[in-house]
Amino acid sequence: MSHEPIILFEGKLIDTREKQPSVALEERGLQFGDGVYEVIRLYNGTFHLLDPHLARLYRSMEEIEITPTFSKAELIHWLYELTEQNNFKTDGIIYLQISRGVQPRNHIFSLDLTPTLYAYIVPKERPVKLMAEGIHACTEQDIRWLRCDVKSLNLLPNVLARTNAERKGCQEALFIRKSIVTEGSLSNFFLVKNNILYTHPADHLILNGIVRQYVLSLASKLHIPVREELFGVRDVQLADEGFFTGTTIEVLPMTHLDGSPIAGGHVGPITKALQKAFQDNIPIQEKRSRLV
Image (cartoon, rainbow, N blue to C red; front, side, top):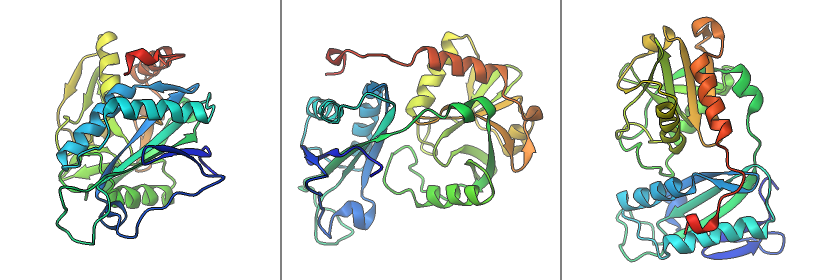
């Protein structure tokens, strides 16, 4: 079992060692990818950036017209109960999914459906070695739909790109859309040139990652200039530094792209400064009262 035994399913905690939950054959998340999800980091069993994750979850639901049958306070309560019932006190993630619900198969969805909610915990260590050494990435065409700002279940292009990267001996794929670099298959992307941090604008062509936003705030505190503007593959190849950001990867340096080194293939000073700032701000304990 890769996940912790007690899961959240439709508002109840279920011990999967005693009972396995099931969903209907005509569940729209299964048949259409009709739903949204979040991945929330736990450090030492403590939530990291829970509020912005849930804010994005509710925005994603609103964008695709899913109406939750529970309040945000109820959801937060369930998530805390999930960690407590599993007695989870190490590093990991919570995978949280909400789909539109069950309906006889029809492309047209009804407005009165009850969403299907589930969440579970997976132990996951920080990728310390990769963060120190950097990774190899390869470019892949960005064939995703035009609403990448919605964290939907429709991840087939990401799956294909990430699998192709793995087959090439790379740890991530860098998406290119009409010669413009957008983001990674499971991450956002930044480059550094002349001590300035560049990243794609947070529009409909990328997911505005929670750690992306957090790193931008860290850059501001460190007085690192930031420009959210478009750039191409050539700009990445000539960059002084490049790195990916994400909930599970934090600030992950990219030292090689399509087999060629970026700035000699070394992890750069701005990347290291942001990694240190991230490390220094990892929570030890958050007060529950701040989140409800």
